[in-house]
Image (cartoon, rainbow, N blue to C red; front, side):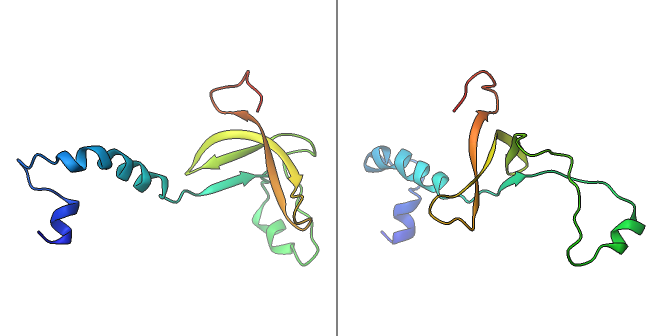
Length: 109
């Protein structure tokens, strides 16, 4: 039996030895799937004429205010809200302290 035969048993095989390890293997495979995580600080709308006037040092005001929760988005879906924090290990980096998980609005983290 080749290595590829071990990964995908043929129809009719009892697969008894795979029955125990297959769920764990499937879960491990799923847990390794990369996802895109974004934190939305805010957004802005402006006419193209103002966009063309922007230069180095320009500040674009966003629709979120300081202290307002930010959305955490995974693969295009809002999964949580939280507060922007400075990462303790590296003061040059920002992080998000989750305060609310989507679907669990009354439960704080």
